[in-house]
Amino acid sequence: MNNATGYIAYQLKGLMADRAIASLFTDPNNPDDFIAGFVQAVNNRTTLVNAITPYGMMDGYFAIRLGAILEVQYDSIYAQRLALLMRMGNQGPQPLPIREEEDALAFLLGISQRRGVAVTLWTASESYAGFVTQANDLFLGMEPVDFMGNRCAEMTFRLTDIEMVSLGSEEERMYERLDKHHQERGE
Image 1 (cartoon, rainbow, N blue to C red):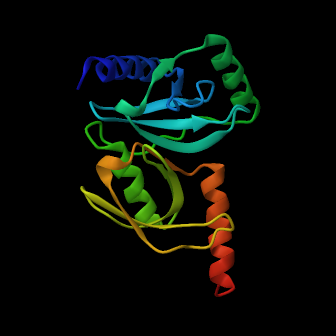
Image 2 (cartoon, rainbow, N blue to C red; image 1 turned 90 degrees about the vertical axis):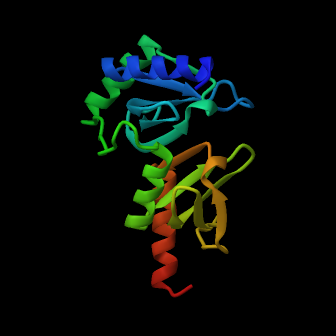
């Protein structure tokens, strides 16, 4: 672990211990874009975050390689607003049973495969939404979906090339509904 990822892990562990809402910045091309949420797990490679929308609704999970995190912040005013919105909407963190040493990306990809639910994954240059067909410690098989939710030809990814995975967000739930529709119609 280099100094930058070590410091990021230190920050994330502090926010997790305080049960504070973290803001994680991961997109070098959009410095105003961030993921807000509760840090659920941190190890020397990855973190698992229970995401919150800007409107105070729980929105699935992000597993992120520490090397893909550019900055971690805690904004008390923003966190207060999200906490208020969450209370108003009867929302709260929804922990997953991850072990501290477990790779968060492999963890979410395994859930996707077992449950047949959609994920979105990001590499250094692209993002793909779809359904995991196989996963192990080295490779991932995935049937990506197109804009209309139709499954495309299976793709294979090296697990080390995946920087971030999202599961259970509104976008993934949309692809699950589209997939179910296409399955029922035999498309």
